[in-house]
Length: 233
Length: 293
Image 1 (cartoon, each protein chain N blue to C red):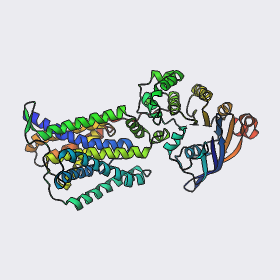
Image 2: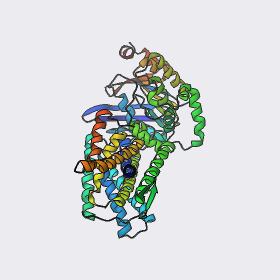
Image 3: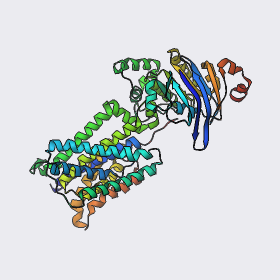
Image 4: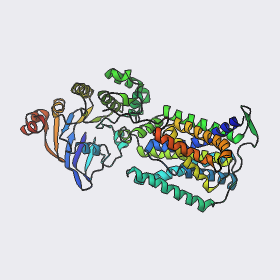
């Protein structure tokens, strides 16, 4: 479904990605683990069209999207939940959700979709007229996820969904990710919490200083000594 | 009675300030850029209006849409070919570029229309209108009406249309908006188009109140006390701020000018600006950033 080949990205003279290749197949949950500064966020931004690669290509459903604009990429069905949530803090919860459906053509279907989201996240229904900036961190993460889902994506990219959240809330967020997976949406999950990520994902890539160091099924990586030492210890 | 008259005139002039400030706020909301060329957009709008009415001899109901359209185009061109080039540069450079743009536009206007005074064809009847027992020239009355209509249109646009929502999204967080498929550049371009249009409206009204001349762009400076008072990111603030500054100017000019010699009315707006910056820097209606982790 998503195919990244030999991707190189540089910020000035610093090489952030040094030739990354990876694949995500339809219906899969794939996770990308790695420590701070490994290049995870850069990779995701490049896929979303926010950062331009020096070389390499990205294809989605067989079509080249390397040079497409961010809005065109969303239009093809890739939604990105950025790190740090990036909700619209000065808009109400409901307005945030409406913004998520910005590119949707089937506006008459929306009302049912909002209801569906509210049944999934009852807290958002309670708070729908509240400014999104007043929500707690966990609620903001739910909202960001909800907002991305409303664009009816085929692939959803989650960037550090557990970042800065209390452990209990992290569990809640991962329950929700599991629910999303069950609806058949393909997920590319970037996470520092390797334990959680490997539990939910079928396959994983380990990114270190801009290169893929390891890849394989989650079970095999959970047993891999290098992974245990560096990320699970 | 005299006081009431000063207040009404203040409200009318303040309505024009409000229109001009709305343009500043629109651009600020979408891009966080303070546009120093707003006054030039006002002046150019007025000159285009003059040309289409006098030189091309168009009737007002054609001249007005033509003027607004051309002014919108100028706003768009400024964004597309100047601002966008350094959109990702440091904010201070972007703001400096708007200052450069203002000089460029003023130069362009001098080249085309020169520096002489033009008497703008009166688009409102010369008669007065009776408001609360005060005889007010019609142009003053209609300035208020236009400001109210434009404000209501914008409120409706931002509250109830998808594009308006997208624009607020861009204002709130450009990257998040882009991640939802909003084409940030078109939204920013549109804010400049709107800004050019309201500036032109303000310019036409102003030219009807006084004379038309290259120095009309100085009114752009008035937009700053207005938006600083109202809050840089608030449409309502621009309107209230405009009215307050207009009224204070008019009343101060009316009463103080007899006591203090010199153009005291020109100074009060900036005195208010200083006071607001000291006690409430985000303005009356501006948002203080609320952020939670």
